[in-house]
Length: 193
Image 1 (tube, rainbow, N blue to C red):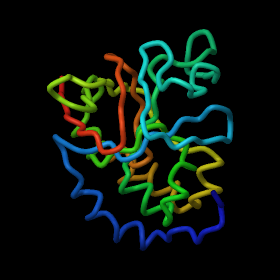
Image 2 (image 1 turned 60 degrees about the horizontal axis):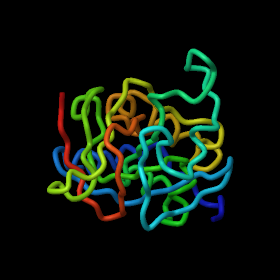
Image 3 (image 1 turned 180 degrees about the vertical axis):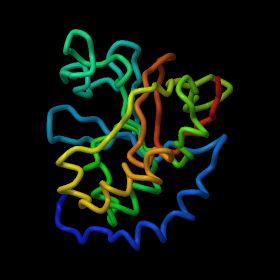
Image 4 (image 1 turned 120 degrees about the vertical axis):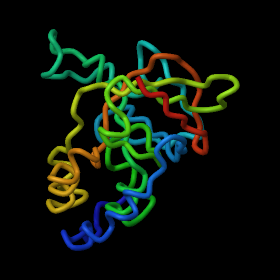
């Protein structure tokens, strides 16, 4: 993966809004599963295992400290980072750059606060077998300096700005509530509180 790409302008990002507004609200797809075994490393998976204690098995979430948790350890409501495939695909400009965002699950789904209030559940996989289930938490998901470096300052302003915050264009935090295996192409069904 390379970090050399032209970053999107504010005008390009604004012009892309109709594509973001067109994301499905009730039934979407899981497009990508990415494990972060160590800081700065990404593994794109054909199948991932979601676990109650570990989040995405093999991911380094459990080893990452958080200033938002009471004990400074990994925050239980920030087990998984979820991002819109449409948003990151547009920012990245190249499918090989998408994993650089640092999220584990990439969905074609409306991730906005209005569509997925905290407590909403996402059933991922075969609905007859129930699949894995993750719950949207109230913890904000914002970008870092690496996000700016990779996708530009305008990209960061857009995903965290006036439009981006309510639409959760940087993504959302979630936790596993029913363990299971997930694969790119899996159906994602929304269950709201």
